[in-house]
Image (cartoon, rainbow, N blue to C red):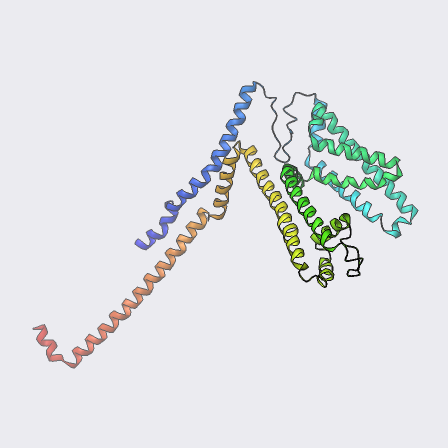
Length: 384
């Protein structure tokens, strides 16, 4: 009976550790309630239901049902923000990009009939993109120019129409592939992150240019006569501009070892300069740029959390840590299952110990009976 009560206790009573789990998840519920409270307060202060809400997908104002516009614009907005329309436009962008790649094959390019068909399909897709931009302009009105992504789409469409009239600009029609940036949220986040770290990247670029200039002057002064003297197969460091190009090639790890060996055959210590430049430029500076971009993506993620739940950036960072901890922590069901498994193991241990005790009692009984059989008189005296 006690064992049965122990087995049923995890299901009938909450575990002590579950309170900690609920305290962790409380921050999520608290953030959601704060977000709802903030939304209600904004609606109360405005005194109207014509507030703008931000779309979870892109952060733009998608609340066309709440805006004070005529029914036709509402209908157009509902069409343009339909997920099926977005998927259709994405398919057209992908198809258009593939057609431009296929059209570069010589067998296709030399076939006038196929090229004519490609041009017709391209024109139809361009007309669809133009209708899309026009519908967005009709729905958004003056707010159209405030959305940089919509303006970018319109610019791409305009360049495509110009390219259809000017043959020298037809190569720019492939720019329509950039419309993936405006349609795919992950790509938009990367672009926003890149623009947010432009000052940091600019500072790193200045540092890289400074390193390039210092080493260019050094290499030009040390090795400018090597080509004239026949020590190198090319004039790598004869002039300042040639040195800058050669060092850029070395920084990109493009056959830099061949240049280093040619210089090292005459100056054995030259390898030290090559190693120092590569470590400082290719390893340190380039990794700094990658680190800055990764940090920008992390900041962007915190900003999205803050915007969604109405938190500050510091609270969003703490919230993210809590959520990661909760995701890594076992669920309440898994804890109960683990507790039951522990109880089963304990029950097996008790049963095994009882069996050992029974065998011990049986052995002792056999020993006592055997002794009584050998000495019956002593047994009678004991009974008397």
